[in-house]
Image 1 (cartoon, rainbow, N blue to C red):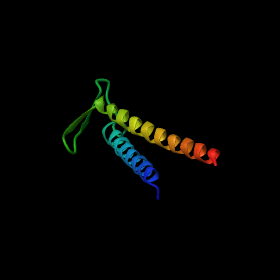
Image 2: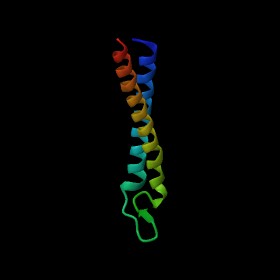
Image 3: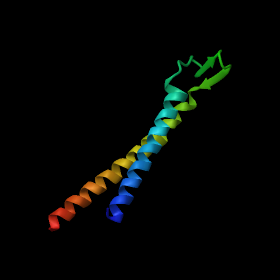
Length: 86
């Protein structure tokens, strides 16, 4: 496997894994809860107060997903350009 291809797959895999982790964190910290009008949710079982500030977890999730998309598109464009030269 060529070196640039291996690094492309590694970058793509790492970006997708990081994106999946942050989407999971977004779900766990924000989407799971029904917040009241003050932006809080009280979990009586664990005696924890969750706030609606958990939406920020979606920002790195989308960022890493965008990075993975850019890596994939660059690989496709590089492959097309390489095939066009032959």
